[in-house]
Every structure is written in C-alpha cells, then in structure tokens.
Image (tube, rainbow, N blue to C red; front, side, top):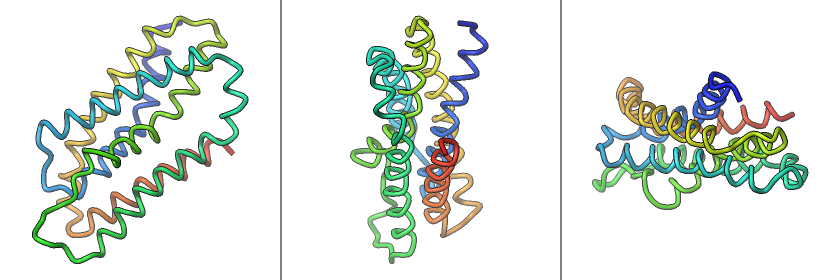
Length: 184
C-alpha cells in the first residue's frame, strides 16, 4: 500500500483523537507533561491496536459490527460529554478540576475514538494488505496529534473562560454525532 495513502488514513483517523483530546483538556488550566503523555499514549495505543485486531478478525466480523459501531462511539462520547456538561454547571469545590486523563474516562474515550480504526483494519485484511506498517503509522500519528490537541485544549479553555467544560462536552457530543452522520 502506498505510504502517502497510509499516512493520509492515519491523519484522518487521528483527527477525532485530536479533537477529543482538545475537548477533554479544555477545562484544565494546564496539563502536565505526564497527563499529556498518558492521553497520547492511550489514544495512540488504541489506534495502533484496533486495526491489528480488525485485521486479525478478518472479513467475517465486519458484517456484524459495521451496522452499529458508530452508535457505540456516539454513546460513549455522549456519556463523557454529558458528564462534562453537567459538571460545568455544578458548584466547584476547592478540589480542583476533574482529571479525565486517568481511569474510566480515558479508557472510554480511547475506545470511542478507535472504533473506526477497527474497521480500517478489517478493510486492510480484505485488501490483503500487511497490517504492521499501517498500524504503526496510525498509532504514531495519533500519538502526536493527540499530544498537540491535549496541549491546545487548556489554551482554548482559558479563552472561553468558565464554561470550557461545557464547550469540551459539546465538542465530544458533536464528534459522536459527526461519526453517526458519516455512517448514515
């Protein structure tokens, strides 16, 4: 497979990760290097692993999941997005902002943003394309764009002000709706 095609595919898959990382970090005053690395690592790892899983699953699985994979992504993104919106209207305690770079929120977002990568892996299996190089490039590009999005989020959050969490939640829901619209 042509390297430029694989790179274009990697950038396309990573754009959701970039936007989600920006949205989830917009409520923070700043992300530490460790938090940024953790988000980028998880998103990149899932973007690497899902095409590999899809490739090994082969053509038979595609028939079963392609009808509803976008709805799963929408549900996961809406779950986290609505939680962020609700938290944006709650009175804040002195505990500080919620860290979405750990635990369940990070896992949910990693899965939600990588479902399309599973379908790409299935498609590459149908095309009889080797999966190693595409999966590595997808993971690396996603890692880089996620780190950039995670670092831009707090800057945008400061510009938006107190309702940055609201904006972040709306961005996540918007990405989920976009995914569904692309599949209809």
